Image (cartoon, rainbow, N blue to C red; front, side, top):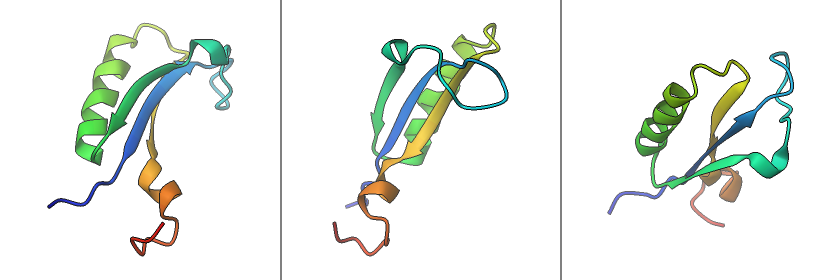
Amino acid sequence: MEKQLLHLVFGGELENLEEVRFRDLDTLDIVGIFPNYAEAEKAWRAKAQATVDNAHMRYFIVHLHRLLDPDGDGRF
């Protein structure tokens, strides 16, 4: 059984290109939670490509498994 390494993909429009500060938190696009990095990257690429015309739109991959198990020992 493959280990679950959960990843969150989300994005939104940034206020400016110099920092990660979103214009409107109410409009964040929560793409989903994925069981591994490969699936998360696939979703991230699709969203990033679909919004390529908006320079302020950014999507991110968050390694949830690192937040859930910061020591990496498999215990929560």
